[in-house]
Length: 371
Image (cartoon, helix red, strand yellow):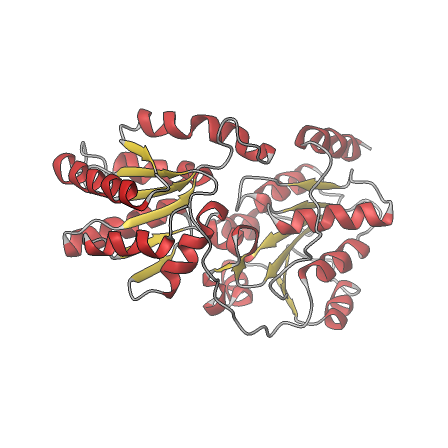
């Protein structure tokens, strides 16, 4: 396995000292290590923004930056990779470090299957040379040298693709917890407060897993919940589309701070288009929980102020289970509603995953909406 510190030291020795991106579970050790180092490191809102950040770094320094991402984030990055950094436009070298979820032949969750199959071919279509990162330090150093030489010669990005198990472990950063309730407790309180016709669209990651387990434990079934196993940052727009088509049904979106930040412009669409039947619940723990707990930018974002500024008519907060139950018991009839719930980082060690397929979930959910 590759020691993340030695890998980062090798990059630094060769002039790569600017790091930005969106965390990935396969890059968890790398992300933890780079966050503790002396280099400039910025956790980006999304992968396309990270490419632009690295481009700005290059314009000011003449040195390429490194952009890390899960392969699902290639989609967010295509635009700036094709219209900004490509040699046919500005020709800006960027070193990409891409976690290969859903790699063919390696078991993974269903949302990664298609992206895993097209990870390398997507790089080829964009004309980005790549190598699968070696787990031997000397071989990896040689790959870095090849990448830097290629970027100098072609003025084009270069990608290092990271397989599962490439990096050895690195201790994560410990942060003091201030929130008094868990995300699971908050989700259970919201689910218990639903009206007879209400439905939920839950964001990718731990929130959907915890909602699924709550339904399992209470024997309620899963037909009222649409679980976004992928498409990070888009749960709120799925919920908006449902709410516009069925204005007589209250639609709840369970969102995460990292997902909300990734496509924060969607808040302006909701505030302008949604009706009184839309409830946007933000579960805020300041972390990318499902990929290793790396911090988001939420620690310095006032989400209620943002929601008010973009036009949500009702903005609420809860930082304790008692307050949350009070708020849920007296939701106003006008909306859309924005509700920020402060929750602790972390989840149960024995937390399971949905046992139904995405196709089954969608079919059951659509049947419920027809009733």
